[in-house]
Amino acid sequence: MLSRTADALYWMARYTERAENAARLLDVSYRMSLQGGATRMGYWGAALGITGLEEAYTAKYGEITAAQVLSFLAVDADNPSSILSCLRAARENCHAVRGTVTSEVWETVNTTWLEARESAGTLRRGRLQGSDLTRYCEWVKFRSHLSRGVTVGTMLRDEAFHFMRLGTFLERADNTARLLDVKFDELAPSGDTEDEYYEWGALLRSVSAFEIYRKVYRDVITPQRVAELLVLHEAMPRSLHACMREVDEILGMVGNARSRDTQRRAGELHARLRFARIEDILEIGLHPYLTQFLERTADLGDRIARDFLVPIAVREAAP
Image: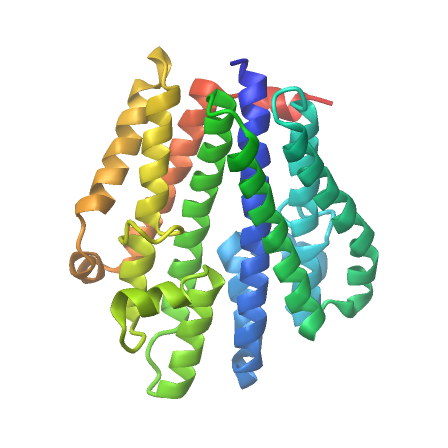
């Protein structure tokens, strides 16, 4: 497969997943801010921290307010990681490889962008709040689910399919680690059991894990079990273990002579998650562990780009 084709497929999937993750983050931040009282602005600051966009936001808006953070993360065209920007980038990458994806995949991605563009004006006028915000986030998640479902249901299981899945799972692993890293610190036990239950429940719902938690543990929500579920549980679709298992397997399918070291590093990261114990991770500290994980996945992304995709300098220079 041509590196430019692989690049477009990979980034189309990453941007679609990133838009969904941003919607999940906005939804949980809004729900938790309603319970936060005087600390509610802290939740919006944390949302910027998770996405690594504090500097970009401060440069444009200055003071953190709920309405401005919502606008910045949802529909700000100047923010390349906003939901609107991600959906546009996904559509542009899909358009570049229309002959490679099925017509159903193209129509799904293109329709999502057209509907998102139509609704952006209304959202910019400050109507993205309350039930409107919840509906918008659910719509973004639904369109992302639809895109993945159409991909799985209509694409040939060839290299094109594998590169799309590779982008999805690497992006998902990065987001889960960031979300857990910031929220685990933020939700340190305060002594208010009722508030803690609501906040941990909101965190689990943000990654569609609340019902899964109940099935796996059948008990009260505790920080250690939340971390175990989202980091180590192989059957949890958005856990770090599940994502890196997929990345490891996919790299084995598309590997070439140049990618052996990349495959080795992915396999090593997967093995660390497969054989780890949550007690050992918490003993050394979840934050240092997740920081190292994010560094490793960033390095893995760079290596994948070097081995298979269009060099960053070439992609940035393209019209």
